[in-house]
Length: 413
Image (tube, rainbow, N blue to C red; front, side, top):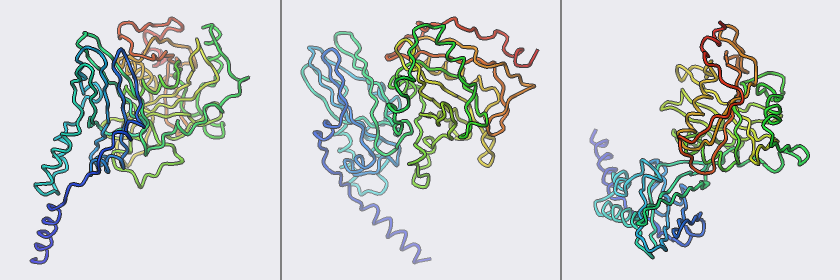
């Protein structure tokens, strides 16, 4: 017993004597890797620290606490004072001393004080006077894959300057970065449409469903068409709360932290004779319930924009020991995505194309895993915006109209 007490006291003393030894922060290195955008006399440079960089520069394993430092440099060449609300970057950002206090437990008093001062010193100021430059860190919530965020600057000239950043984060190899986009289609296979009639006919000729790897068994139904260039689609999805997913070839589950399960690879389904080009996941508080979105770049373009074919479904399981199944009403996930992107101000317009036959509750189809599902047979078409769109300006395109009494229809009455 005395030995146990001695060991506990000794380890406590040793840990409480830990010293805080961060490396110096070289802003020239951060500036070299940063993305920079300029609007109306204000320039913003932003760089996201990797796990290793954060640990070296701050002397602490910040990623293990779910904290991701983002370095900002804001240059104000206008005659007006500027202010940027940090909530525009992350609504739940961490205050500097909050980050320090989260790491206090194993440090001596002097080291705690040094830590507090260090995090406070290197935090970015929100006020930028005319003709000045401010730089420093905002401590954000950790995101792997691509860090997508807005940064708003409000000026004394009563104008808002809105910036959008998409910054790859070192560490997670996401699936869509492994795709050879230029090699997917030969030039002679690409088809550009300007006529809505011809475009809809081409969509209707596509197969109804994804398949297994051999193309011999039908899997989940196609229920989305997204019109928009890749970067705009990625930005809209990330800002709407969707997570990218890891490439199956590079994923190592044994090395991941518990919260990283949200980035796990999504099971491949096949369309255009290949697995999905990109998959996204949106999980609830438990990983037993999630939305999964698979996208394939098509050989089509419409009105000068890329066309993506998609499959979205909700998957769920009653317990961690049960297998995942898709929610039988697959149209619910389709409708959720419409609302999600609309409220995120990423939608220009939307419409529907009659894509498959109606499948009723009493005569359902089966997925690749033998999960039963039913559908009204409509494919949702969404035009994605390059910039934020007012909620009230989104247009409905009157192609094929959704059924008014959907419940009665799917009950087969």
